[in-house]
Length: 396
Image (cartoon, rainbow, N blue to C red):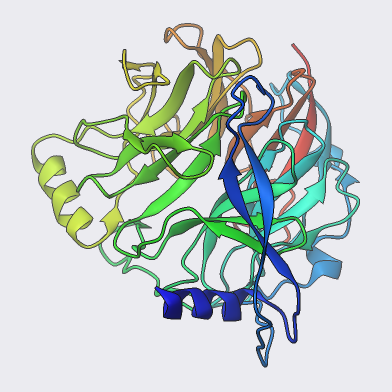
């Protein structure tokens, strides 16, 4: 354990750092509803490293050149809910942009357009006026989310297992998602200093974590059950509870505005599909070809299927009213390549299409007041399949 900790510190700290790190501790006063954790300072010995890596290889001047209005040619007929769209990133790949609890900041993952680059985690104010990297630049990172209060960001990383980018899966038998065992959940402050490692194993895939609006729990995806299930835990990594037990992939979860429900994506393979699912899982892979949207209570009870579309529906997020869900799906494209945003009531009625073009549209998230929607799209890309971050005014 000591050797692993030393390696982690070497990876994270810049050249000739002498300073302090912080670690999460639980708050005993549960009446503080705004946050159930705090940071306490601990001292560390000075550590050295001889190079500062950044395997995202981003040209910031080109990729993060500041928000710009979306050209009129990149609006599509039928997108009546989206106005005044601003493009926040350009070039490379930029995705999973999520707002802080106070809607003042955005964390997201990105990498450059060169081959053999990996996603790293970045941070910017809501107006997009500047961008900075807050993950160490080693391994692959994903699924960032901002803690309530203290300026700390949660994300998953393979940094303990892979210094460079982990190997890409074999796509010869179709498109698959890798479930890297090295993914563990970390905390970083907004200056890029590693705060804590909530998961301390390299045996399971632990990722896709988000935080309840009431600041009390985290929901995340893990293979620790032998399947791909959803779990919840306290903000300090304690009190892990399994929420889903049905065979198939469960992930990409978000809490409702009142923190009482969870929306997520799931597959329920049967027959030959189930056999293929089990074989791929043994290899640390999953095919995201058929996914539907589900809702359950925050304790894992009362699960119910919301969509029955037959395609790949994912990235669900509750609207501020807690009654509607916005999500991404390819069910209208026979080739399964084009993803658009849709809205549906949580009882499965009232399906409405939101976007009508742009190739890939996904990862939608509303501001608390419902006045803005942040999402990712291929529209106005600088090269094929270029994914960028957009913020739009939402019109009811």
